[in-house]
Length: 227
Ligand code: NI
Ligand code: MN
Image (cartoon, rainbow, N blue to C red; front, top):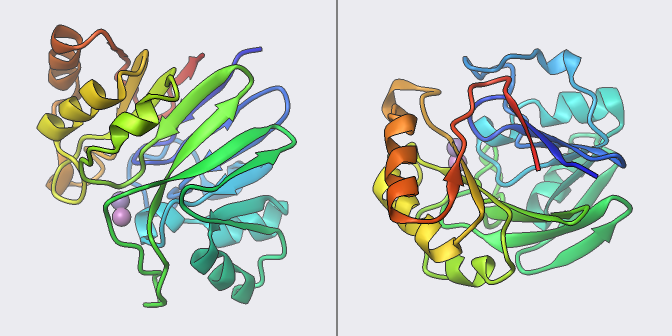
């Protein structure tokens, strides 16, 4: 069984298996690069890494319209319940859960997580997804941290890493992250959405492929890859 991964720009990805459609960090209506409208997506689950608007995005509207279950840390979960979201699954960093379609483990991320109204959003996270026979690490917003090496010990088929700099790792640290994680494949994200995070992704891909054994795919918003 293949796992299909579609990039909606920024940190937003649709990941589809035969069993479920997962939408990660659904920043769609405010996202100048999004190839879709928020009312066109119909995920079964929404995964939210932290409370910032460019990740929480259209989560509340999509969850209310579709009934999708939202997976997030406990603090964001409580806020979502207060927003009238009935289907929400709280987790926290280091914890994993076996959903009917695969396993999710929350990983640490070096970042902030305040919600749009200023509510404390707990610690930000990344996602380690075990789907079919594949392992995907979506790092979300983070700086470089040495424990990425521990995540790499899981044997990562695809690492989705921010390269935009300013708010997250930039190209140099993202290259060091690939060296720590040693994934088979890499997709860069969280760049070019705004001027402040403009990067040359093809140039970064060249560096990664010269210095590591990982294969890099530079996606355009709307592109899909299969694992
Ligand atoms: Ni953020
Ligand atoms: Mn962000």
